[in-house]
Length: 564
Image: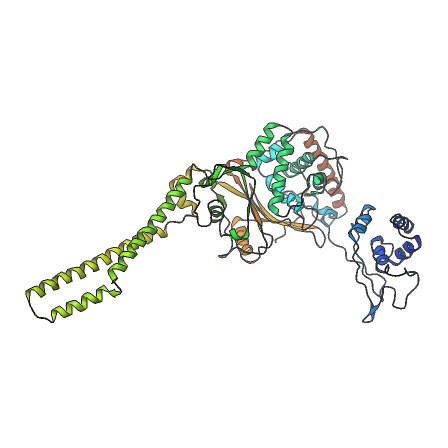
């Protein structure tokens, strides 16, 4: 914008024209910095900025340099500036009395790096969040993980809209249509992730903009926001057909019954810090049956959703006992009426063992002491006394009876010791939290839920594909960038263990999916979405080839995965 255009904008905001001109000249025509200057000096009569004051151009001198501390702009003024299109991209420029201006070093922006536009072979497409530290950022990892589930992917993509539009910069921030539909934008991003798109990455900006009117509540936790996402997807795609709604309900909705026959639905299971335990079974046991398992078999699932989402609400508390042990398979069937008897039987046997051990220990106490006196010592001293009295028949008979009693006590102690050894051995092999112990021979007959995603924050997550695990890290503070790293489950499990034991600030979200839903299948994409992807492939190929033609020393396979 020209100086006069910015002066006119400030005048429209209610500032005097001469004051606006002076402030803009002083701020090198940066409208946001100019407003800072005006408000910094507004406590008294506004000075003439065209002249130096006694204390220098930027206010009172401190340690030989003029002060350059930024003055915060009130929110309503900042919003007004934003409505004129300023301030969103401008970085504050720091000045001092010795130098007129310091040019900020350019920050890397992947959106401007054409060499990164083409998707590398075998590397998943990437969705980029818009800003840091916003719950909306969880849209990106969640959609990427869900798009790897064929049942979700195909349900989303099967509906066809008449016109999807196209913008050359849809992947950055431009709308393809003037009034985009949320379902259409979800479809567009899922198609980008699932189809033969050649583009390496795309922003979720258009989806966030389209869904802004739907986000009417202030969500205080990750679990609340993901619950909103699931519910919104079910509602919006459900309007396109009953079959879609039914499929999505099966994917995300579990039914849970309490002992009073009250039934509730759940789409995510939040875990507060006082329920942080070292594995998923200890957590679910405690959530459903109480920390002491006193409500075992009283509460349980009536129906299990195909996608089970567990959210650890991080607030700085860590997982005790060395951190959380991630498990790749999960058998939630033990929390249903059909299989909970297996748990009940094991739990009852543990209680029986506890009672048997307590009974034997009580017997041993009686064999050892009576009315505060040690039985063995008392028998020994009595026998010694009788032996000293001579060989009288009655005395000899009494001695033999006492010797028999002492022998019986010794035999009973030995027998009790053997019983305790056997009971303790059996108890040591009983782990009420071990799925192998609970299910036993039934385990091969049951279908597990498979871990498909671990979200640590809106900037770091891992997910499972047919080819293996990938870790994604976004950089949104100093520029815009991302890395994609091939990984293994063992590596991720070790990282989660260390993170949860030491710094669990943002918690994490786990997604488990019924194994049968992870079948290999080609995505079902409607024709108009195929046309959209085809058009975009032509565009990204043209941009990339034009760029590479000007880079004779660069190879087209220069994309390299960067380790975390």
